[in-house]
Length: 331
Image 1 (spheres, rainbow, N blue to C red):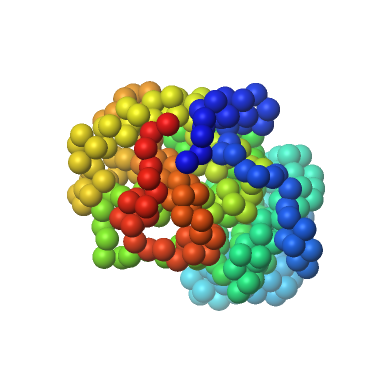
Image 2: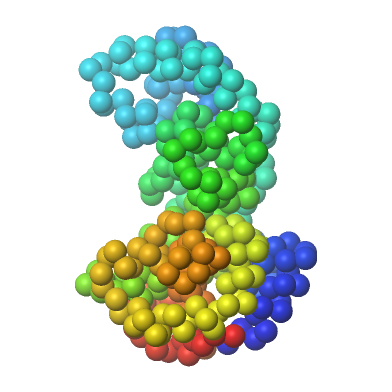
């Protein structure tokens, strides 16, 4: 097992945030040498700089997949009505101001390009069949934060303005919106991509199965982004993570005493893996989604104690076997 995890977590917090230990924060040579050039196309500039019918039409013709899949052109009667809708929306003073704010906070995207490139190289190394999607950014007016398919990734940068910015997605509670930061952006996308490789037994509807699914997702992200502090992967604060490790024995005891691992009631499962400001069944101080956090610990121990590679881990769909062979116990 990972020894002295709480102590190392406290020490890491002083430096770059609470993180699981990794052998290195740099890419191994065999991963670094993988040929890959990630460039992000800024479609907010395409569709907000020339907000005229001709300008918008040119953009739609140049990026037809974006128009069809993200902007949902097919839901309009004809292209002219579609163009005029976009012209009206993008000429709105509030949308124009939001666009200008995005340019202030994201004058360039080189750092995001580098992070995606490193993460995609790692995924390609472990899963040679992986082909990175084309990446676009946009300003959606808080209608769609991230759109991801095997071929295309669209990031709405207005969602990822600083937490203290005057523009905020009003429909999101604070405990969720605090995860919409630049630091969370790439780990969030990589965690979503992990589902492409995360095999599960669809007949297993237990809480444990859901915990292991999320645990494998977070483990995947940490593997391909080893320098990323845990809080940017799971979306907790550093204080939340410290508190979880400090009370890990009590959390585990709650699951054992209430026979939760094999619970199948969706309502009960949601209490431990669903979005919530806290897990009040345990404590008002326990962060929400505590089952996902414990699932991550179980998966970490399973892989460490069984000496298997990342592809083998992601193919393993037997949650009970993972739990049994993990040897997991509170630190």
